[in-house]
Image (tube, rainbow, N blue to C red; front, top):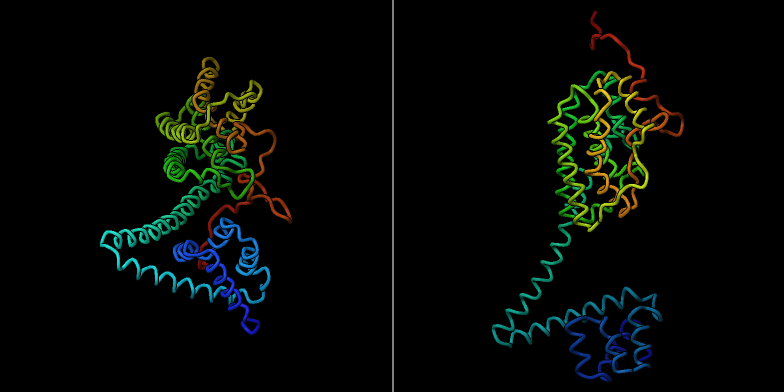
Length: 343
């Protein structure tokens, strides 16, 4: 016994345990593997054998020869499995069919689990690409005021329709992917001031301000995007069993709303006259704010502001050396030059 290698010593210990525990132990070893040795030994209360088997199996005493012992154990288990299949071959047709079906179901279940990983990764990547594009268009965290002010200052208010179409599509993909893979809701964005909930809330705020405050926009286009984004917020609340929660602090008080209207007017947007506009905006906000607030509490996320206080600094502007100027302050060379040096 002293001349055996470390791997053979462990096998000898397993043989001792098998002889002590009898047939029940041997059958469990054949069907489920060497890890069952520990449970079976404790069941029969063979304390001395259990200490040796646990120590040998997990490498507590012979850790330096763990690879050799693992290889020997693999060969032994392979022989046990073949012996088990031979016994199944002698049984009736139904028994053999059941054994093959059990093995096939195990591999099929493993394949299904593995196949989910690429789908989850692709859905997460598609979600984050559009959120990253929102940084230069709405700031970080995004806000409805910045979306409209930047479009107005650039004189590109006509591009608002295509912008809303893009975010209607994104909201539909968000709804489909997060209902199919609810775990995606827990995946965080790469920047701590960005999130999928902040993006969908920003789009809802933008559509609500357009429908209530701004003249000359396409209300039908804004209504479509609003409907899709609200659909995503409400359905996700239902899936996660989140109760709508009323905000304790108004996101757009009287002073903030006044500042928002002033910024929009300065950017060149034509606004509706004061009157029932404030009530309409409050009614629209009441359709989605309780749901997004409940989701924010559930996932520990922060809702974005409707109007930013002070200067808005985007993520793309930040760098270790210096801060880049904003979108409307970048140096631009006017005039065109020939590419190949012509006049």
